[in-house]
Length: 125
Image (cartoon, rainbow, N blue to C red; front, top):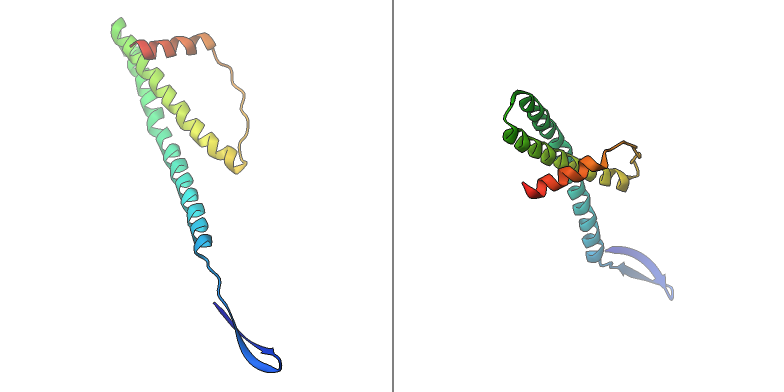
């Protein structure tokens, strides 16, 4: 609310301006909440990479020590699952980089037949 002295017909008057800021407050609250959620998801995704990388590397070490083919198959499925989870985390981080305009395209080579086989193993195991 603003108050100002004005003159009307050579008489001193008070002009009071009242502005409803409820809608403005709601919009600002929604923007703040959205930004906080983005920061939380990005931070959580970033913090998930370290333990995922540890699991992936430990799994690789265990595979080298195991000779039983059934156990090796299970370990391969676990490795595929953790790699998939790591890709999802990286995709989440990429989404926020795209949204902030800081994303850099990265080219990589992949073996499509291996990806298809891994996906098939995930759903059949």
